[in-house]
Image 1 (cartoon, one colour):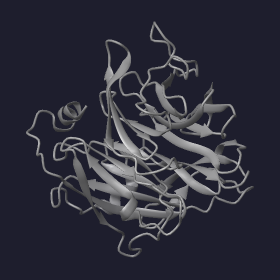
Image 2: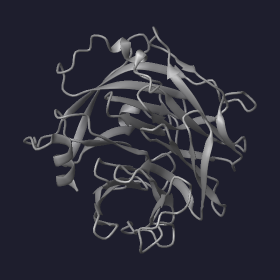
Image 3: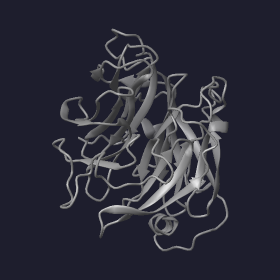
Length: 360
């Protein structure tokens, strides 16, 4: 898979084998206030997931009690550095057991949102799809606990990994299970990707449909085999070093020809509070098989974020080169400009990011 990622990221240019440094320039930060049950914008007690389209952030939550979870759509305020403006009330509310709720949200270029909700062990779980205006357009019931979701760049179908099934799940736009002509892509007959166990937490994909995913705290990769409609060359890229805990997320980032493609992930080994962002959020250069140095440029007026509990989620928007990150315990959403190389992209005008193009 590393070879595929190199070709995708560098379009045939020579690849540097050394570890790279990626600059993340923070341009927006907000503290969400929609964590009180009964509030119009309630999403859950803590923000757990994000999908970012370069203009709007769609955030979902979990609750440590039985308050349930939902999704809210927010957009950066023009002319400020601290704050996102909430466009509308929350949508997609579902009651859940304690410490459960929305695990992941994916965005598709046509405005469709894919959502994975975990109701806890022994319960029926769902993959849902919404319009970017909050209308429910499909629901898929699955027998395992839904964790990660991503729209496959090859066929645009919503693809998922679930905790315990060990198989890749894929659904059509109407919510029915995808069938490739031979098998259903469900928790019973979908492609198998586990090596030693199936405690999968999150997944992302590169531009040609290869997987990068989490098995507990480990980072795995798998190449899509178009001829067999399955995945091959399943490799554990980074060791687990952890028991199985929620919030072990990952995002694939291909930020242009000055980068080796890399994955950003949460190295969450414990759930305790007091963990520093920079100790937990890491990058892994799939081309050089080396750690990526993440050079943060925090908003000057706010500085580095407060310590958290290691639970972060990520959503990268390639056309704008911007990244959204949610901080579970502080209920913050951070927006970064991903800079190809120090000095290669003028930082002038980054404040204008809030005026990013509207889709319509």
